[in-house]
Each structure stands twice: as C-alpha cells, then as structure tokens.
Image 1: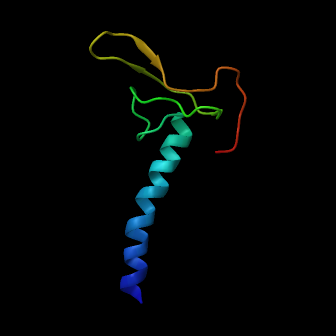
Image 2 (image 1 turned 90 degrees about the vertical axis):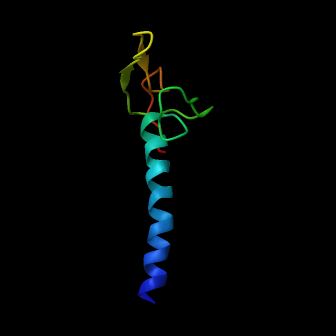
Amino acid sequence: MYGLTLAALTVLLPIGLVKSLDCLTGRTGFGLIYTKCNPGINYCAKGTAVDPVYGHVIDKGCDTENFCDVC
C-alpha cells in the first residue's frame, strides 16, 4: 500500500509542478524563456529575464492587459 502511494506521488508531483510553472509564467515547457505562450489564456504572474546572448529584456508574462485568469 505504501509503495503504491509513494509511486503515485513520485509520478504526479512533477506533473503538478510543471503545470504550476506553466501557469505562473504563462509559457509551456517549464516556463523557459524561449517557449511559446499558451494561446487564449491570460496569466497574472509577470517576470522578466535578460537574454545572455543579445542582452534583451524578455517579458515572460503572457497577459498584456493585466487581466487575471484562474489557471
């Protein structure tokens, strides 16, 4: 019983964490800088990062109108 519970947590916890990161950053793929925003979904969280190669400031949030949606 405990082994089954541990196995389920080991599988489901990373999936939930990745989904949360996508929700907070507004981007798929662990919220990385160069991934695309999910279409049709607004996000509350904002974040910026500096591109180490070109020095550009990158807005990692997808919501441009400050509208908050439940992820």
